[in-house]
Length: 164
Image (tube, rainbow, N blue to C red; front, side, top):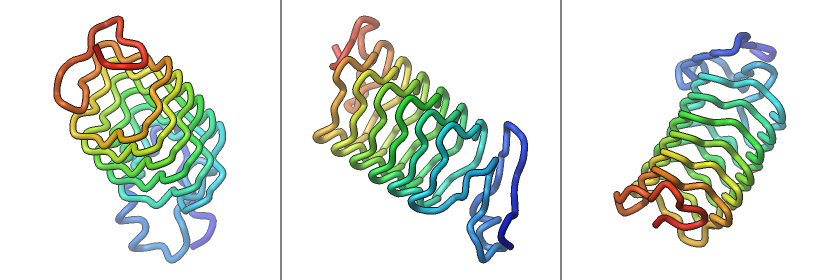
């Protein structure tokens, strides 16, 4: 079923159901949902990527507003300068992902694996990191004001680089 495409800004795809029907990877707005895919500058606002394997993929400058990325495998992915406010990344594997200068305002990272990820200059205002594994994660100059930290406390509005 190659070439199966979902158009529109709010793709809202039920990826698990589509994958069960299609033998080939699903494509959303020109982005093939598979490991090592190239989805730079793609618009995937509201897309349902839940459970997808997008390891070692390139989502540089992608628009992922309010996308459902629960339990997605983004290990080693490049998600730099991406816009992902309100994204649901609960339980996602983001080990060694490069998320330099992303805007993840209000995003939900609860229980995500962020070990070794680079969140330098990320905007994480109001994001929820409760229960996330942040061992070795870089938060250099990251804006954390109002974020819920891994231990459940809320970061002060002037928190930059570390939750205060």
